[in-house]
Image (cartoon, rainbow, N blue to C red; front, top):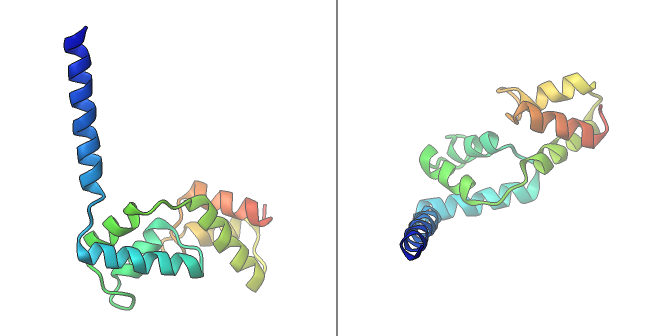
Amino acid sequence: MLKSIGVVALSLSMFCASAASAQDLTRAQTNAARSAKNYLSLQGFSRDGLIDQLSSSYGDGYDVGDATAAVDSLSVDWNEQAARSASKYLEMMGFSCRGLIEQLSSDAGDQYTPSQARYGAEQAGAC
């Protein structure tokens, strides 16, 4: 019994150590995370859209790996972001339920997952 408790404790401590080191960001990743928080304070973004914004040469120009690590280090409710984006679209113009879901989930649009896009469109009242 004691031996198995020790193995579980060792496994748990190794997991915690690897999870903690995953949160250790480089300076570039920390800066990208700060930029990401600023963007999220202004408008809704999908995970992929935010990574693209941070890594685009027309955006912040961070390395894609740094942008990805930065975004993944944040605690973001992507469904809520989709709802924010959907509400903004509906403030600007009319969309059908299907049209708004397509806009939110399109690779050329906001890049939310289909389920996030549906959630956002429903929360905004388009569906």
